[in-house]
Image 1 (cartoon, one colour):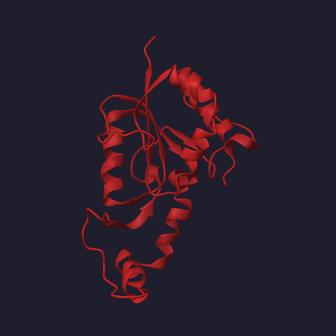
Image 2 (tube, rainbow, N blue to C red; image 1 turned 30 degrees about the vertical axis):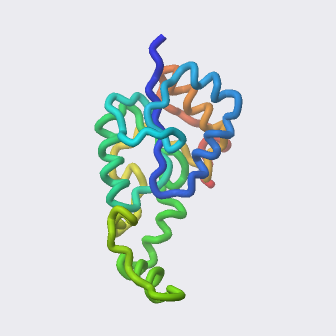
Length: 181
């Protein structure tokens, strides 16, 4: 049996979707028999691999590193699942959009409200350059499946993965499968 190459990513968000993924508990053992985890914040992989079958993408696109990574993921992945409300709509991460330009926000946070010796972060190795607007994943690249929830329940994640493992793209119905929040 050929295993599916599965990736999970964490862009701009809180990691709650990955915590919900871990709530799959003992089903993770069954899942491990059917997939090879090719990339994940839960593993120590540094480079996104070629020819990934399915990627669960958590979080919104908020900085230049996210932008680069999500384009790379789209080029190298057959099925992208927008994983959680931040990936689907921008959600809490996109609240930054109403606060003005990234420069003015950083000025407020790192200089004006600093206790001592405030200074702007300038090293992109320390803090990636923020995009002018936080974007949902589908605003940047095509998405194949939307998995809403903040975070999606383990049951919803399992249903989505079972459909993908069966060779079907996720088609959800009913309030428990398609509600946000």
